[in-house]
Image (cartoon, rainbow, N blue to C red; front, side, top):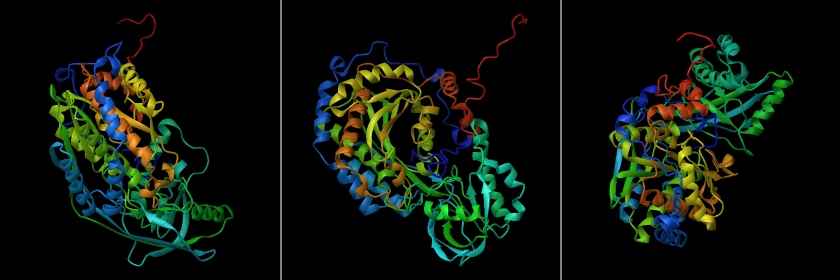
Length: 528
């Protein structure tokens, strides 16, 4: 999901505070703080090197991750959360885990507020000339009247939504197109606009607008003749049909508008949504630890996808690397001291719903979670490990990555990623480690009709899977525990220092109250 910010993955996380009830940050009372030593040992010094070498050999000498990816892409295909195909993928994931000998394989069920099924979306320009336009519906949006409707095209400026909402009554019977004109708001103002977009969609439906063109929030779709679908909020459904339009068509409409032409569009969008919740599930399997089985390293990617193609790069790659990592460790014959828990999350595309469900279900276990290692940034090579704000872990992780020079340079930083399933773990104080990738073509495959198996290089996929396996095993088998969850105060301060608090609060995601707030400085000479 990671790359796009606005539309899909895009609305990176419209999560509400309520989802964190019962799964909030770990507190000092139940999580004694443990951190990597100031002068950590390398794998050659801490005894893990023989196992890592064996895992590397088995990982690089098998094509199973690539074979699994083809099977998932070509024989299950798109896996929209809550759909029959997603349920089939859950069964497939459990079968794969059982076949390789993982323990405690099961599905952990959770509910999505409603199911959604794409129907079709067609559009045509009727004035100033007549031709077909290429559109696709965004996810969890409504339909036009049966047979569609025709109306004049009206621009809505994403950079001035307050002003546009004052004119909303004029939208009745019109097709709206979201554009960006004039100065782009920055900082808190940009975030405010981000949220007002949802108000625009609700108002457009209330005043009987026909449809909205602008799933990318005023930005043109990336690529040649590509649309990009996605969710428009956390577990959110909008009654107004919203579509993504290919860049070439949108640019033509913009040129007409610049020329002052009257533009008319006929659009027909038909989707289906359930009236109530639907079931989904995360897939879980383990390699149990031999000495500290209660301590857990989560390793995963998300099993759900969008439905314009087969969901190979987002995030079939994360699924197949996770399964490949588990297989490489099993084949090595080495057993870790701590438990490695492999999780294929669902509901990521609707707002990290599966990983949120995981942190809620496993709340009592979180103090014993060492880290969560996630891959979800397309089909490219892993080039960096973002440690989720845990700068205390960088020295130890650098000692580890320096031993992997044969796989190329791997950077390490304390970057925090909230655009994938690392986010809920970070907010719970657990190190959410993102496997950052160099995926230059992901901007084209992301949520589009070209997210297909042929876009993946097997050598890169197998390398990424092997790096995931070695990273997970090293964290699980080193003599000292790498980390424990930070207390809420420390997590809040880290996020505030990194300026993540502003958007988290705006999204309703901030579970820390006033924690992390900078101390007020009193004027010189002021009395206590």
